[in-house]
Length: 201
Image (cartoon, rainbow, N blue to C red; front, side, top):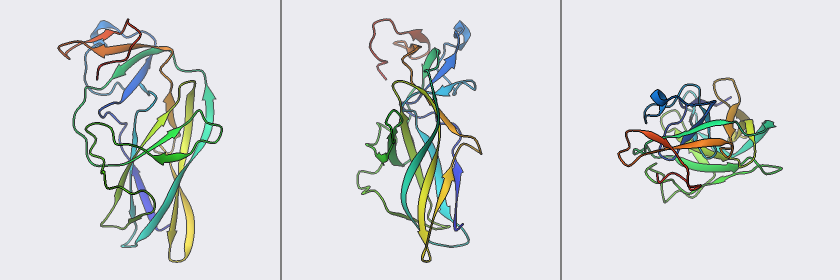
């Protein structure tokens, strides 16, 4: 295998949210670090960095998704991040509700540093020139576990590299069964959303 990847710590960037199973106590209703028990809500990014081994230059041809399981959406409380600026990414998305989900190029989210000049696959990586990808998985109907497959070409050979969450599948849940919590006007407290809309941020 001529290349390697490192998965990011669980994403907590502008536009991300998690669903915490069960009720959220008043002490938890304060914007802050990503809750440890939270499951990524739909469209929350997952990131990883890819680079070549031992000075090898490898061409990255595409990314595929393997859905492992689908269940009813997780019930609980949806907790959002308070937006900050994020580093540049190769922005991708995948609709996990499709029968055969396809990973496609996505529009950069506000503040995440995505490049407007990004023309898509293929990309080239080496030991000194890595690429950072952020995939935004979405689902409106399920609690989904899945992995990714990165397709590559090097020295006349082709292969695939499994991308996962430190040996475990990624997990994303729809948030339709969760109570939405949103920052109040001071952004120092989270309050339940009651008007059927979405959080302003």
